[in-house]
Image (cartoon, rainbow, N blue to C red; front, side, top):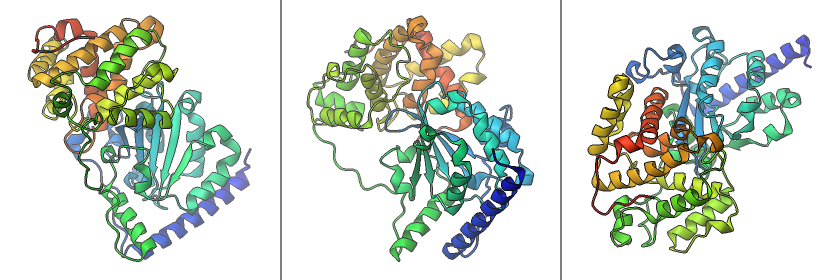
Length: 429
C-alpha cells in the first residue's frame, strides 16, 4: 500500500511532469487554446441522468473496431477545470455508459492531449476510479489505446504499477499519432476533437521538420475489385451476383449460424483473432470460397456478419432514416410498432429485403435466449450501431437509447413489422 507521504510525493512528481508536458506543448503552439468546448445544448437531452457531465462531450460511443468490439472514447481536452466538474459524477457517467457494453468485448480510446494542471483529477481519484471498476469491466476490455502519451503517463504507470495486474497492463497500447489507430479502428467513425487533430498535425510536422498532411485524411479510395464483398454498396453486390438481393457474405454467415450457432452462449458478443478475420475478408474480396467449419469457432462468422454491416458505405437503414428512427422514444409505447412500420415502408426495396432477411434470423436467435443469453435487447445493443449512423460523424451518447430501442423492436416484433411488405426477389433464411 502507498503511504500518505508517498502519495503526496507522487502527486508532486506527477504535477511536475504535467507542467513539463505543458511547456513542451508551448513549443508547438503560440497560445494554448480553450479546450473545454461543451456540446451544443440540443445534442444532449436535458432528461439525461448525467446531463451535467454528458454535455461536455468527454465520453462517446463510436461504433465498433475492426474486430467487432464497441469503441468508447475519452477526451481529456473536454475536461473542464476541476472546480467546474464533480469527478464523482464523472465516474458515475463513465460506469453508466460502460454498463451497456461490458457484457460484450469492448475497447477504449483515451485521448490524452488537453490534460493540464487546471483540469487534472487528483491521483487519489484516478486510483479510486481504477478500483471502482470491478472484474466485469476489466474482463471484456480487450484494448485501451492511449493516444499521444507523454511523460506524465509514464509517471502514472510507475505509480500504479503495483496495483495494476500484468494481464490488464498487456491491454494498454500506446499510439503516438492518430494514424496509428487506423489499423485497429474505423477512424472516420471516431469522434476526435478538433484540438486533438490539430495537435497531431503539429506533432507530425515537428518530427518531420515540415508541414505534414492532416492525419485525419484518408488516401483516395481505390476502385473495388470485381469480386469485392466488403466496403461496397448493396447495389454493387447485386449487380455482381446476377441480381441476387441478399449479399453472399450475409447469406453464407446467416445460413451457417442458423445451423450451428443458434444455441451458442454469447453469440455476437465475442471477438476472435484479428489475423483470422483479415484472412477471411481477403478470401471473400478475392472471390475465394470460405468454409467456416475450418475455423472451428462459431464466433467467426458472427464477427464477419457484423463486419459486413459495419463496412457498408451507407448503413442498411439508410442515412435518411436516421433522424426519424431517433424519434422512437418520443412516441407513445402503443404507437411505436406503427412508427417502425412507417420507417420500414419508406426504405428502398433492396435495403428492406436485406434488413428483413437479417431480422428474421436475429428473431430466431432471440427465441433461443434462454440458452444463448441473447435476448432481443442484448442483440439490439450489439447490432444497433451497425445498422444505422448519421451521415456525418457518429451517434451521440444521447442517441444510443432510441437507437437500441428501435433495433430491439425490429427484432422482437419481426412477425408483426416485416411481413406486411414484400419485395420482388426477396428470400428468407
